[in-house]
Length: 255
Image 1 (spheres, rainbow, N blue to C red):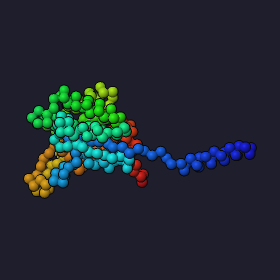
Image 2 (tube, rainbow, N blue to C red):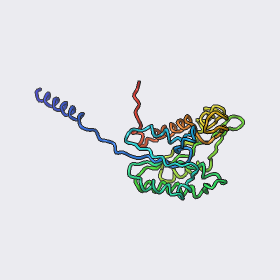
Image 3 (tube, rainbow, N blue to C red):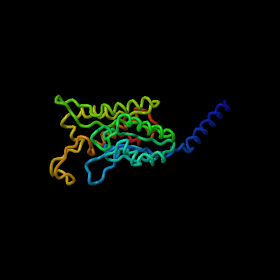
Image 4 (cartoon, rainbow, N blue to C red):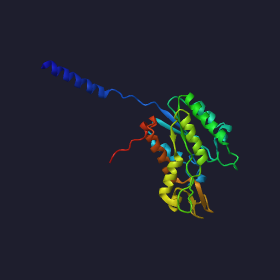
């Protein structure tokens, strides 16, 4: 009987000591955001225009650095031609993430940033390949929906072809994680409806804001509320995909 008590005491002692051992620390990582104006950091003169990458930085604990390299007006082609991707690729290290969201500027044939469908696919594949070579995790994101409704009040698809290419690349490149922000944001806009959805974008009356004295009606770029909504859609998909990054999301205390 005494030996049983001795074993039990020893076990309890070990458990107590184990609880005081330092827990394994998470290695610091960087989450790079590459893309266009819908997620980029804005200058003060553009406010209230807000990229979804701006609120996104606040979702994670201190082991995560969000490095937003997205830039207004850029496509996959111009991002490469202007040497914006190459420093990201060079800086990547094992465990890092690269969130890749282009399409708004690639798909418009009248823009200087226009990228053919074939080149768009090839550029996305390059981003994925180079990230993986550095043992980083690429995450492909379809472009956020523009605010467009038909006469019946049904949201219309505005990125059908180029979003389809993103989905195809994600599937063909050995199941690269895909965040289908196009479809998720379409669903969100439908919930808001044709009129109320204006509250997510830069819609201003003349004289309403000093940065836009003539007013503005922009159905592509988000205000603070819209950017936060988009960032939360991305965060929800990070959790749904069970990415390792999800373990670094800030845990809010339960009230």
